[in-house]
Length: 308
Length: 250
Image (cartoon, rainbow over all chains, first blue to last red; front, side):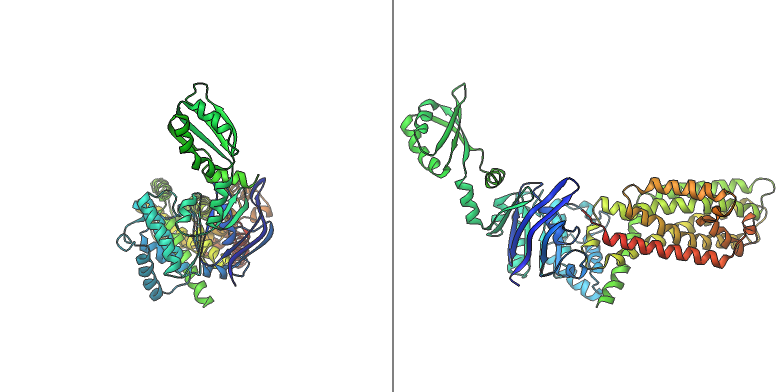
């Protein structure tokens, strides 16, 4: 079995709302990032993988098995959802004992594993505090500890970095990488921020409006991002000569100069060429640029471009 | 291995769901209801002619007809439904435990909590009556009888309202209609239809357990009533477990 999960022409809808639409993906071993804007269908995909919901149409296999109404499969999966569900009156250690009980672990194994996973997520010190007083980062860690407790083959981490500060975010990224490299878990991790996923893995799938729009190595995704048309805003003084020069360039699609002549919007087909030539053009036309910003250097615009 | 998973899992769900119910702020409502029962029974004991027959009648109205179904509804209908709404149920449904076993765990947890609350409230109410009543002989036995009777009621009402809470998003309304229209009104309608209530079946069992109060004159075969209540419980728990297994949790 080379893939940990496979979906083929999968569709899931909730009444009139489509969660996933003809969604196909092959998730290999290792760490795979699922990237897409909010509402793209990432959480729906995770719920299907854990058998919380069933597919309307299509084929889904997780570790070679059908997940819906298959509790034995859940012994091989650890799930960390994006929302907060931790009971605030329990402490971290009590919560993990509860999770261990749900997995049928006896008291000896529970004691060992609880200490192990607390060590892995660096929560030993705070394990005896009630979770109601935990920070966002601590809550994420203890959720991951709960998902790790029964030593699953596959870990599903839904937006584990959401709401965490930069320092915690870096630690979490390192943790996710270690979960694969050091502890040997296959990981499917989701985010709506590409560069966060990029720091964890090169294997990425993009989801947009319930469809898988691209998957593969991150360098391919980056190439798509740099190839698609960009809208760029330029602000400064003496922009008219720069606009006239830009209009002669083959990569320029259109230019819209603001009435105050202190700003303009440039649409370019090949942004790499534009950015490469910009310093020379600025020097040649004598304009004084104060701001250069690509309005489309984000995933949403890439998704829109990819789905036409 | 599977046996071990099911036994430990069942025990875990029952223990943690019971703890969750007890930690909930609803205990304030239970305290209020308990105080109300104690107040009414204590006050009633000071009236002329207050005796254990009177106490028995009071317990039928306050406990069997009111407190038992209302407490069961408050706790039972919200147990799984609240966890679905706040999504804390994710931990249970992503564990390798058959959902039918999990459901049974919830049911056992609910029954344990309700039995505890019923014991406390009935004891407080009964003692309040006995403290102020001139007639006390046999009072303790009456309290124990009504506690035992309500344990039987807890089994059925818990099964009913836990099922409703699993099936519906707003189970409280139907539950209230059931308690006050079916159990309250229909039970008082003359003829055989009134016998199709949990309350009536409990009163038939009560008639076997005590000679005190008008409930002692309820006609019917107590064995049939016990069997009917147990059968309804088994059917409701089975259907509830089936529904829970089939339910998608988004």
